[in-house]
Length: 135
Length: 135
Length: 135
Image (cartoon, rainbow over all chains, first blue to last red; front, side):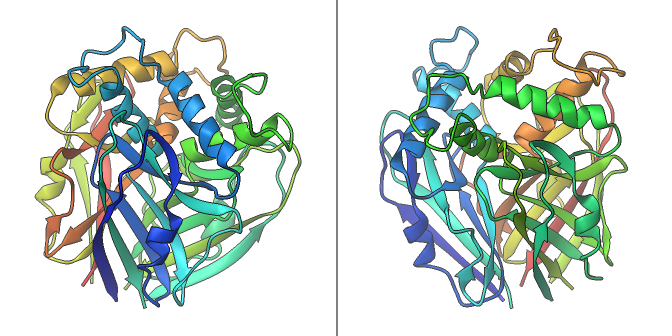
């Protein structure tokens, strides 16, 4: 059995945001693997801590420190200082997450949730594709 | 065909550890993809070199350098200096690995193995879920 | 339905290279998920911007900056200064990418392509395994 659906997320400000509920709403009742893919190269997805908002704030702080915008390193800056840095953050974190599902119940740990990582300064709606494969 | 099993790994000290044999023991005889997911946000999984122990030591050294604990960057440090850094390392490396399998044989390269990346100072047992999908 | 094929990529120089067309040529007409796995630990795969060559140049610049070869950090340097750094870059970027497919059409965004990330100085042919699972 294959379930596949494209979903447009509401726009989020630059930073790391929990989008778990958007995914949960769509899950079919199968056992297998759920794959969530973001159709962009300046935003990404990750699975991490789902409770304390300071974790997501610390993620934003750290990734800005790791991939600095004031760098003279980059050639591809046509769309501003957050252009190339967003591409790099996207590859460090990844364009997809996947997790096991059993009879429609995600087999996450208690503290796991799904992050939308918005790396651009300007808010925009982001498209994701959810695919569940199983039986 | 879907195969799914939760497995508790024995506790490992902080660092990078080969857990390939734990996974190999569970693989069903199908052709498709194997997905291994860790149900935690302060430990992660990766696929890398399976022979020389100094590679895993260098991984631990580098990630401590990349995500320093003496940083004043972080707000989320309730559980100690290895708290927020563990979450970040987990997202940089990822909460799952996946690889092709053919008639029950992993289609790895000769030098590839699966790492458990334990980012916390205190040893703890870690739960993983292995899902294989194929025919 | 499961489709699986091993493919040898032509050798590429150190850096980030678009290999999207090699993958596209192999895709079966199913709906589900495509998984692409590289059978090496000193090269990796990523999904990112597919149009401007300076993006791939900036990726090479940034990853050399992030994982410096002149470092005294590493023990595993038998094969040269690009040995251990290649393993680390490989785990930061990952040994596989996966994306949704619908009736044989990849469900990418307009600007997404697949990168081969070659981290070694010496060119070599790299083996990948493409697995598509769906219906």
